[in-house]
Image (cartoon, rainbow, N blue to C red; front, side):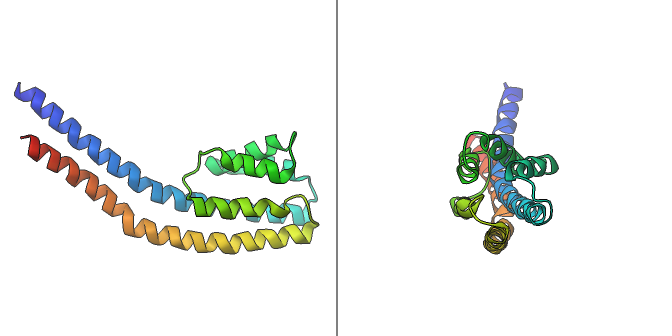
Length: 169
């Protein structure tokens, strides 16, 4: 009987610790994804400036260079461009909820699509630069939130698990 109690207590403690770790990881993942979007947009900017390739092909190349949810978004957008315009394809790709970003971040990325494929190269480069400025602000905000909350939630998960175990004893 004592062995079963110890196993249950250990399971409760480990479960709550894992929940704390998962919550804290969202802060790290958000910051990482925002940095990857910035990197991908800079790749896009360079490619449209110098290669004159179609947006669909550039997005496909970017998806091969970035191995994460961000790369997957670019792949989905590239595939969607077969049937939809560039801005619709981009918005549809962002609407698939595989990212760890917040609504504010998502709105900035959706605003990027307003001129996507509708203006000349300079107009698109200007839109990318504007989006990069907004992404820089969001990255700084995400970094502050990560530094503030990451350790808090890890510790809180362990303390909550320990408190539950103590109450059950």
